[in-house]
Amino acid sequence: MVKSKKNKELEVAFLGGVGEIGKNMTAICYANDILIVDCGSTFPSMDDTPGIDLIVPDFTFVKENLDKIKGIVITHGHEDHIGGIPYLLAECGNIPIYGSSLAMALIKHKLTERKMNMPKLNVVKGGDKKNIGVFSVEFINVTHSILGAFALSITTPAGVIFHTGDYKIDFTPVDGESIDLGRIADIGNSGVTLMLGESTNIEKKGTTISEKEVGVTLEKIIQTNTDKRIIIATFASNVNRVQQIISICEKAGRQVAFDGRSMVNISEMAKKLGMLEYKDNTVISIEEIKSVQPNKLCIISTGSQGEPMSALTRMANGEDKEVVIGEQDVVAISSQPIPGNEKAVYTLINKLYRRGAKVLYGSLEQLHVSGHACQDELKLMLSLVKPKYFIPVHGEFRHLKKHEELAISMGIPKENIRLVDIGNRVVVKKKSIQLGQSVEAGEVYVDGDSNVDSLVLRDRKQLSTDGVVIILLNINVENRQLASVDILSRGVVFDDDFLESLKALAEDTFETSSYKNESDRGGLKNNLKRKISRVILNKLRQRPMVLPLLIEQIKEDKDEE
Image (cartoon, rainbow, N blue to C red):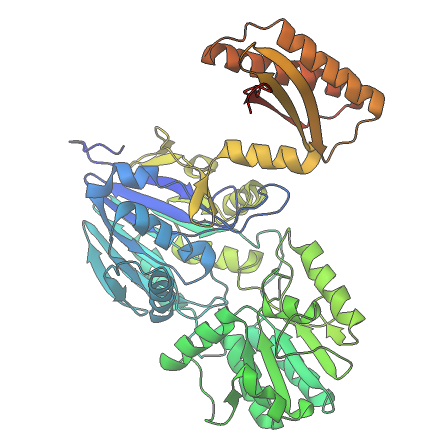
C-alpha cells in the first residue's frame, strides 16, 4: 500500500505491460493521490493457459488504495489498454475514466453488454488538459493503428511524467491527424523528469511505413480482380484501414458488407462519431449480399488472427450462414500474425485455399503496416522529450533491454534508466530513480464468468499432456472391507498386466491403511495417489493426474423380501 509521507515522493507502480506485450496498467502515485494509466487485457495461448478466455491484471493494489484512486486515463482503445476495464470496475466500483471519443465508446459498449453501472466517461481530445487529483494531464495527439490515440504529459508536484502511449510517426495519416511533434518538443524543452516509452518495435531499424501504403496495395488488389468477390480481413479497431477500403470500393463501384460482431459494432460507432464516411448505398448488411453480384461486392471481416469464433474462420470452416467461400473469392488478410498466432493464421490460410479461394497475406503483399515506432522514430521521440529519467515499457524484457541500449546511445546515463517487471515500484527523486518496495501484482485468468487460479491451470496442463487415472475403491461400509478396485484412464494407456499390478497395489494400500474416520480417508487417498503416481512414472515416464475415489456401499440383505 502507498503510504502518505511528509517528504512526499513521486512513485510509479507497474501493474502490467512490462516484460510482456499486453494488459498494460500503470499507477502514478503522489502522497494520497493515485492516477491509473490504462487497464488492458491480453489473450491466452492454448499451450500456457488452456481453456482461459482472457487474462487481466491483478487489481489488489487498486483495491488496497481505492480511496486514493482519482481516475483512469486511457491512451487509446485497443484491448491491451482497455480490455481490463469491466473487470476492474466490477471489483472496485465506479472510477472516472478519461479518453478519446472512440475509446470511451468502446468502453461504454463493453459495460453495456455486461449490464454494468456506467462510470463517468470523460471524452477528451488532443490538446485538452484535465486536473485529476494533484495531477494535471495533457492529452497529445499521436498516430497509431487506431484513431484517438494519445501520449500523456502528466504534471505532478514532483515533476513531469511523459508517457508516449503506443505510437508511430506517420506524416501522411489517412485521417489527416498527425502526431503533434511540436507540442511534444515544447514539453521536452520545459523539462521532463521521467519518460515512459513504448518498446514494441525496438528491434526494427528505420521508420514505420505509412498506413496509406496499405491503401495502395488494397486498391491494386481490387482493381486487378474485377471478376472476383473481395473479402478483406483486418482488425476492427483499425478504422483508418476500414475507411480506405470503403473509399476504394466506392471508386470501383463495389458495395461493402461487414461480417463479424466487433467489425459491425466498431464500424457503427465510428460512423456515429464521424470517423467513417461513406455514401448511403455503399454499406449493406451481410444478410443482403445475395442480392449483389459477387464482383460488385467487398466483405470486410474479422478473423485476421485466425480467432476460432471470428467471421473469417467460420467462412474457412464452411460454417458462415451468409458467406460460402469458393473460386469466385479473393481473400486478403490485412495483418501480420501476432507472435503466438502463427499456427492459427496459417491453418486458416490453408483452409481457405482448400475451398478454392485465392489468398493474399502479409508475406506476399504489403497488406499491413505496424502501428508502433521503429528505431529511428524512438530516437526522435527521445531527442524531443529529453527526459532526465527513462523507463522503457510495452515490451518483453528483450525489448526493454534494447530500448535501454538505444537510450544510452542517445546520451541518457545508464544510472538514470530502470528496467522494471510487473509489481515493481519506482521512486523518483531529484537526484536518483530507485526501486522501492514491490506491490502485489500479476495476472488473473478469466474463464467465462469466473476467475481461475494457477492451481486450476496447472491441473489443466497436466490433463492435456499426461492424462488422468481414476482409482475407484468400492468399500463395504458394514464390514469396512474392500469389495473391488476399478481403474479408469483417459489420455494414458496401460497394458493388462500393468493394470492388474496397479489394482493389486491399490488393494495392498487399502489393507495396510486405518480406514475408520474422515482423517483416515484423507490419508488413504494421499497414499494411493503417491504410490500409484510413482509406479506409473517409473514404468511409463508419465505424470498423469491420479484421482482416488472412495465409494462406500451398503450391502443389501438378500434374506429380506
